[in-house]
Each structure stands twice: as C-alpha cells, then as structure tokens.
Amino acid sequence: MERNTRGPQRRELTAAEECRALDFLLDNVKGKSRNAVKNLLTHRQVLVDGEVVTRHDAPLRPGQRVTILPPGAPAPADLPFPICYEDDWLLAIEKPAGLLAVASDKERERTAYRMVLDHQRAKDEQAQLHVVHRLDQDTSGLLLFAKSREVKEKLQADWERLVQERVYVAVVSGAPKEREGVVRSYLKETATHLVYSTNDPRGKEAITEYQVKKSANGYSLLELYLHTGRKNQIRVHMKDLGCPVVGDRKYGGEKSPIGRLCLHAHRLTFIHPVNGETVALTSRKPRDFNRLFREKES
Image (cartoon, rainbow, N blue to C red; front, side, top):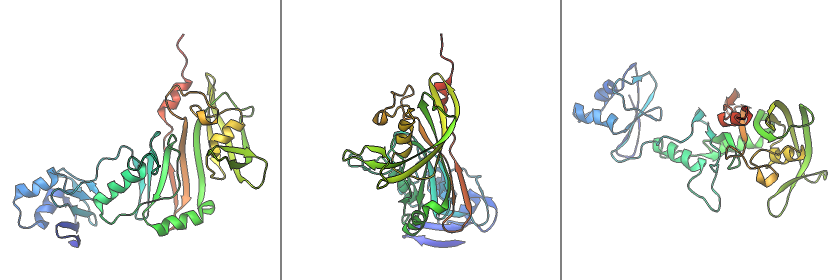
C-alpha cells in the first residue's frame, strides 16, 4: 500500500504482508521491466525502514516502510561507527575517539553530528537532528541525539531527573589510595578554557564516584559514576586524585601508549522523555584498553 510521496519521484510504500523484497517491488512498481525493478535493488535505491536493501530475497514484514529513491539520489552511507539505539524520537551512536561530536571553529564537516544528519537525510529529506549532550573529541562512547527540538529541550530541561545512570570507564596512571570513593568539588574555568577544582561554592558543583576494577603495570581501570555532568569533570577529578587519565596531557596525564585518551562513555540509562520507558544503553569497553594491563615482555 502506498503511504505518501516525497517529491515527484521518491516513493514511500508500506508492506501489507510477508513477502520478498523483489516480489513486493514487482507488485508495486508499475511501468518498469523486471530487470529495471531488479536494478532498483542493485543500485541501492531501495530502503526498508531506512536501511539500504540489495538482496532480492530480503524478507519484508507487514508494516515495514519501503522507500524507493529516484535515480542519482544519495543512499544512506555506511557510517564509520554503529548506531546503538534508534526510535522515532531519539538516536544514539558509539562515537570513536578522535572524532568531534559537533562542529568547531577549525572543523565544520567531519563531525559525528554531520555524519549522522547526512545519513538520516538520505532516508528522509526533512530529518532533523539535535545534540542532547556532548563528548570531548578524544573521548569515545555513547552519544545521544534527539530528532526534534522539542524532544531535545524536554530532555535537557529535566536531565538530572531523567538520567538514572551515566557511567564512564577510564585508564588512569597509578592507583587511587582507596579502591572506591567519591570526588566532590566546585569547578571553575580559566580564560584559556582550563577547568580546575576549587572550594568556592560560586563554582559549579561536581560529584564523581569511582571504583577501581583492576591495576597492573602502573595503570588502573576505573568505573566512574557521574552524579553531575560538568565540562571536563572526570579529567579534573582524576587529576585531583593524583591519577590523571592516560593520554590526558591537558590535565597532567602521561602520553598514551595506545595513542588515545583512555576515557570512554560506557553506560547511559534514562527515562524516555516521550513514552516514559527506561532506556538502558551500553557501549563495550574499548579492547585497546586491555593492552595496558597485559604482562610486559621481558
């Protein structure tokens, strides 16, 4: 059944029953030969629920959305990182280390935001994307976007209540004196954008809970539970502990043997701002962190 039309050539259809992709297209695309219909699949012009389908025997289920792109229209490019959650209102990715979350003065195009927006607009020309929170360029892990300004503002306005768990993992130099504890301070920022801890309550209160998971070779793997979400909070608090994040030269860390900042957004649990359901997202701990804990060769 045809649902709507975006422009004179782009077609949006809905599968009414279980069938194969090619059979569905042959039944619904009129005025084209069998080979021309096959070429729609070959040329990546067919999307099912927003994802490119090229197999003739790809199964369709009732209710799935089938989009037929016009010739020359860009199909969604394969993103260089996974989308780990998506619904009608929100989308979350696993951002790699080294990639900007949003544009900076020096880089406007090669950002997670731009890549995801282009990917979404290849599927829906009217797609919107809004950043809910940010990750530093050198931090990897879970990054959440909203698909409308209304949802973004609803999440941000009630962030402290809606977010139930925000957990990072980090490899730090040395080991804290205690295996677990809480770092609490007020944060301020210098004119050169260096964040530092202070006892001055005019700063922004920051609270980080930590647990040491393992220690070896002069490093420790920590799980970090954020009770607040301040700029550079973890990096400053690890410096305060005397155990800066490996690779964090800005805050006193040593050069990273694995060539990256050893900080990763690991878990995010929140109440969905639209349907009220609990959403629990997990990004696997980076495998290269393990290299720092292996026995050194003699």
